[in-house]
Image 1 (tube, rainbow, N blue to C red):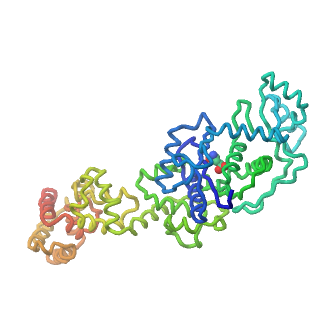
Image 2 (image 1 turned 90 degrees about the vertical axis):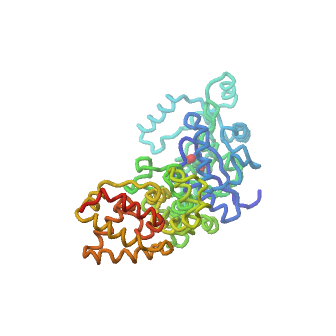
Image 3 (image 1 turned 90 degrees about the horizontal axis):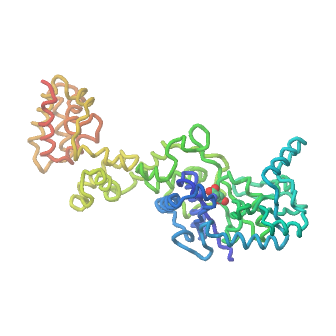
Length: 491
Ligand code: GLU
C-alpha cells in the first residue's frame, strides 16, 4: 500500500443523510481531493433492523446532489470491496480466525444475566471499573472448545494484553487523547449470532481498505481507543483520527429533527443550491483563513487541511445559509440564473413549458437580472415573478391601495401618460421617467399613485420594481392591467 491518502465516509443507512453526516462527507471528500487521495464511500449497514435499501439509495442520491463524487464504493466498485458491510462477513470471519490463532481473541459464554450480576457486584464494591471482568479469559482452551462444540452460545472478545499501556493518540482536531487501558474491557468483537460489532467491523474494514485518516463525528471519540486496540491486534497501521465537533441548533443543543429540516434532501426540495449548502456546511467547523465566507466547493476541494478544523462546536444558523444561498444565486450570470433556476422553476410551477428559454432568452435574462439579488432560495424566483404570468389580486393590497378614494383618477392619469409613449421607448427608464410626472401633475403624494399602479400591475403592494416589471409585461399588457383594475378603484 502506498502512502497515498485514503479516507472514507461510512454512513449507516438507518435514516436520511442529515446535515451532520453531510459535513463529515464533505470534509472527507475535500481532504482527499486537496491531497490527491482516494475518497471511499462505505455503507455501514450492519444494523439489520434499521438499515434499509431506501435509505441507502437516498444517501447515494444526496451525495450525488451535493457533488461529493466518491472514487470507490457503491456503483463505482474498487479494489477493496465489497463496500457494504453486510457483504463483508467473510472478511470479519477471516480476521477473527487470525486473532484466535494468535491468541488475541477468546470465546466468552457469560449470559446477559451473569454479566449484569457481575456489573452489579462491581457497583456494590464501589469499583470504578464496571466493565467485563474477564471471567472467561483464562478458561482452559479444551473446555472452551468443548462448550463451543456443544453449541453453547458465545461471543468472541478481544484479549487486551495484560500490560497494555494507556492508549494515547494525537487527534488532528482534539490534540492528545489518553485513555487508561484498564478502563477498556475486553470488548466483544463478534456477537453470539455471528455478527460483528461496530468497533470490530469498522477496524477490519478501515484496515483492509488502507484508510489513512478517519474523519468522523466526535460521538465516536470514545470508541477510538477500543478501535486502536483492534488495529494493534490485527497488525494494521493505525490511521490518523480527526474527530469533528457536533453541530448545534440555535438553542445550543445537538442539531436534530426538533430544529426543523435536517436532511440534505429537505434542503434540496426547498430549493437550496447544492454548492451553497456544501459551502455553508464546510464552514461549520472549518475555515479557509478565518474570514472568507464564500468558498466555492471547487476551491474547498483544493484547500482543505485538517489543521483548520475547529475544536469548538458550530451552530447551525438557517438565516446564514439563506444568505449564502442568495449570494450564490446573485453571483450567477443572468443567463445561468435564467437557465438553471428561473425557467425550470417557472416550468415546474406550470407557468411556462420547460423549453421556453431559447424562444425569449433576452426576456428571461432581463427578468433574471432583476430577480437575482432578491432571491434567497430557488423557489423565490417563481414566486416573485408569477405575477408576470398570472395576475392574482392580493385582497389586503387591493383594500389598502386601490379601493381608496381618488385612485381611479390616478390610474387614468398613468394610463394616459403611458399610452402616448412610443413602442420603441417602452423601457423601465422611460416608463419611470414618464410616471414621475403623474403625481406632480395631480398634486398628490407619489406613494399613493405608485402603490395603486403597482397593485394594478402586479396584484400586490410588494413586488419587483415597477418600471422593470412593466417593461417585462410589455406595453399592451401593462395598459390592459390598468383597465382591468378600474372596477376596483374609486372616484
Ligand atoms: N456508521 C458509523 C456512523 O454512521 C460510522 C462511524 C465511523 O465513521 O467510524 O456513525
